[in-house]
Image 1 (cartoon, rainbow, N blue to C red):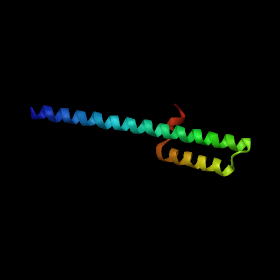
Image 2 (image 1 turned 30 degrees about the horizontal axis):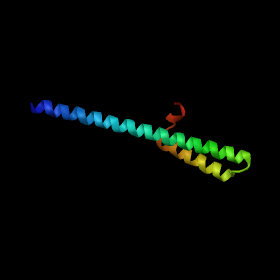
Image 3 (image 1 turned 180 degrees about the horizontal axis):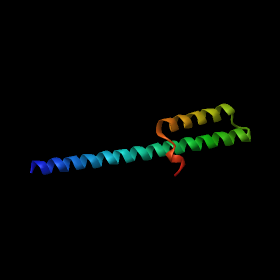
Image 4 (image 1 turned 60 degrees about the vertical axis):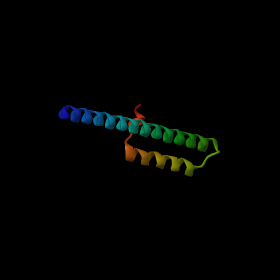
Length: 77
């Protein structure tokens, strides 16, 4: 009986870890999408004359930092 409970506990822990990993992935995709949106808004504002090249560069730097840390998978979705 103890072996059964140990296996059940291991399976539950594995499922929990997989769920946490999926949540983290979704959160990183959302963060990447938000940064991409901010870059687009900064570029648009710059082109319209109400933004600055510095703001566009800051948005690009933030996006590149996110990609370095978490990958660019959100760009393909």
